[in-house]
Image 1 (cartoon, rainbow, N blue to C red):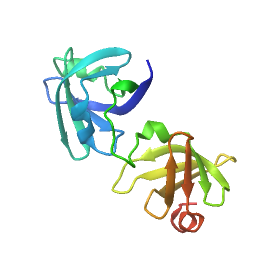
Image 2: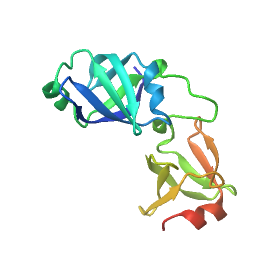
Image 3: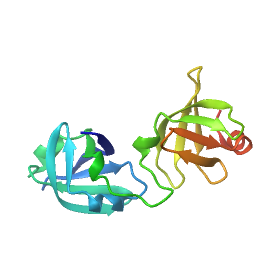
Length: 166
């Protein structure tokens, strides 16, 4: 099974086994289309989904109380790739772009995409060949093109050096 990591369990929420999830999707609403998830290799049917403050709260069959939910803290929320909700044009799953090569519009290699921190404007962490980590906002004008198929992200060299935390 090809897998897609769509979030991480942050903590139990309440006493009825609900889980607070940090989503790795553009919108927490994407979770409403997911029928089952895998946590630590175990399959769970999704019984309820609610969202708020950028988090997702999942109720799962087989997680009846806070104690059962506590055992899932820190686990990745995984779905089968072929069951992933289809995203609108121009959107992509974070898991699909991690490890992408970051280049300028002239083709100059800047490094590899190490991580994405979700915020009002996502913050990308780039790792250079020398191992240095550089943070920058993935704002319009900075990111020119995202080629998911070829794992290549093209950046505006001028804008990148204006906003990057070097």
